Image (cartoon, rainbow, N blue to C red):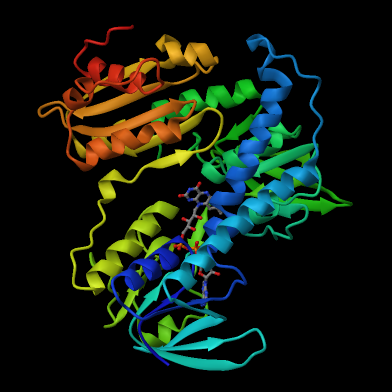
Length: 465
Ligand SMILES: Cc1cc2nc3c(=O)[nH]c(=O)nc-3n(C[C@H](O)[C@H](O)[C@H](O)COP(=O)(O)OP(=O)(O)OC[C@H]3O[C@@H](n4cnc5c(N)ncnc54)[C@H](O)[C@@H]3O)c2cc1C
């Protein structure tokens, strides 16, 4: 069988690329070794984690958050099996949705492990061991990423789990150790803390959320401590010992000094993800790899003609929407159009409580790049809607170029930050200034008024502080 395009991997990069390519008239096949479509994101990533984050937040709200609003709820009881069913149903609806879209767009879905035998040739090994070969003018590697392992610590997905195991624990652990204070660790740590676990986070660096704006990370660290998280920053996990359904982790200060042990029921290893390129035949094909990532040019082409790569397996942030946008751009480039991704305007959201959302440069980035900038801040304590909802934690911070006023970065800690960031992304996509935002009418009372006020604060003319 011969195609215009074969895509290996049906995650957000691969499946979106397939749909856009089919819309543009290409004959497309997608090879996926998982039984369901949607990749990490829909099966074991973004979607199940958000289902549990929402459900656990409702549980916590019902337990502690509603009495000041005059809503008295009897002590809520947890039905973990029902919460997990909500998560599984959400996943099923999403992965089945992709299968429907494939049918609608006449995309052939092939189940099995794909290997690029030669340019234009993909060999697919089915579960039964049988192989078949498909041919195409272009091949896209969209094989995503896998859990990064902690050397010397074996993940059994029972007592020592990755994010995948942490999404399906059969009961609430009494004590949970999270190794890594990145997005995934803090999100899943939040789920289990809200459901009753004592959560201790061990992080190698001396801060949480590496890469995020430092001021945002510092304030959020205090908020998490208030919620009951315990942190060992600047510590590394030297050893994890399992004994009779429990675990003992030995942690050591990175700077040297005395080791200590922490007992727990579950250890979640969340130190990051690594690009997945196993068994793809890339070495034999001569595809250039750099620190595990498939090397591509600005048109997503590898060094081997006819072979392309998108998503987590290539450079850039490991985010579903980055993979999707690359999928669309590549399909358009292959169809002779001008596909493009603006890497300076990719938002990033932490779905904790409160949420954190950011786009563009942090203050640390601007300092290290030697860019002169102005800062405007506005706290949610001064926002009427936030007060009305009792969601006054957090603030908006806008970084604008000192000379041109162009917005270079927006950082939000607060209720609904993940939705609020969208207007900042649109503004940055259009190269807008803080004054553009400040002069844009925002509905009252809304949380988004804090963005307008932060933009006004860039020019020291915020009204409500
Ligand atoms: C717990 C968790 C929460 C997350 N939350 C978010 C979030 O809220 N927002 C966000 O933007 N991102 C989130 N992410 C990251 C997001 O899931 C990834 O960035 C995204 O899935 C990457 O898409 P992709 O298409 O590049 O690869 P993937 O989604 O990893 O898909 C790759 C697919 O390729 C398949 N595959 C690999 N090799 C082969 C082969 N040889 N043959 C056939 N098939 C193959 C795999 O089975 C997989 O299904 C989260 C990740 C995790 C783990």
